[in-house]
Structures are given as structure tokens and as C-alpha cells.
Image (cartoon, rainbow, N blue to C red; front, side, top):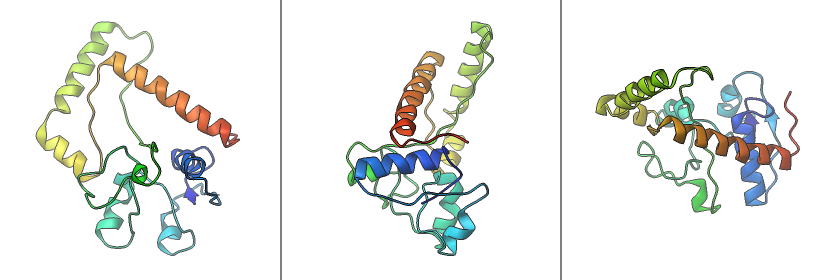
Length: 166
């Protein structure tokens, strides 16, 4: 199982899969891109964000076995979720926009309003979905809670797998 390094998102997602599926995979951490070795058959599997592999899948160079999101992706409708085989599994990469801790609330609210307005643009949403991304507008409070929940989830996975970050 190739990953972008010890403690990386793909590594943690793989460890969660191993725990929940009750299987063992040998972790092969890469400091650089593992895709050439995956495509050449030097490693057998990786867990990677859809936008980084969608081109290889579309070109027929890579076979998607499952998506790690909670729901199937519109861009890969025939690819099942891991949860269809391992109930409760979910490991999604995400991006967000942050500001320094002491940023005034009115600036945070303005930024949030503008970002959410952008995420309501059908053209942008279509472009993101074509890459396998799912835009999820949130309030600052909801995003703060989401981040806290993600920290708790992945801290638990790293501890259970005895992963020490390099």
C-alpha cells in the first residue's frame, strides 16, 4: 500500500481500512510521488484523492476499486464506496479556507459569505465535481466543529496503528 509518507492522509486512510476490514497491507511510504510505481505494478494499491488520479482512471491506466467517501462520486458512478463492503468506513480528503485566530468576526463572516457564494456557482461546482471533489459550503462554526471531529477521528487511527509522525 503506497502512501505519501508516514502519517500522510493516504497512510491514515489505509490504516483505518486495515483496522475496519481486519486485513494486513504492507505500508510503503514514499517521499515523492508513488504513482509511477503504482502504474508500473511495483506497488499494488494506494488510497489517493480523486483529483490526483481521475486522469489516470479516465485514460484506462488505473483501475478504481472503490472510493473512500461516504457516497459514490458522480464522476465515477459505477465505482462503489468502501463502505459498501466495510460498513462505516469513510475517509475523505478535504480543503478549507482559514484565517488567523484573532481575525475580526466581520471579516471571517465576509470571507465565508464570498466563499459560499462561489461554491453556489454551478460552473465552479461542475468543474470541482468533474475532478471528483464535492463542494460543501459551511458556516465558520460548522467548519470549526468539522475540523475538531476530523482531528479526533484521525488522532485515534494514528494512535491505534501506533504511527509516529516523522
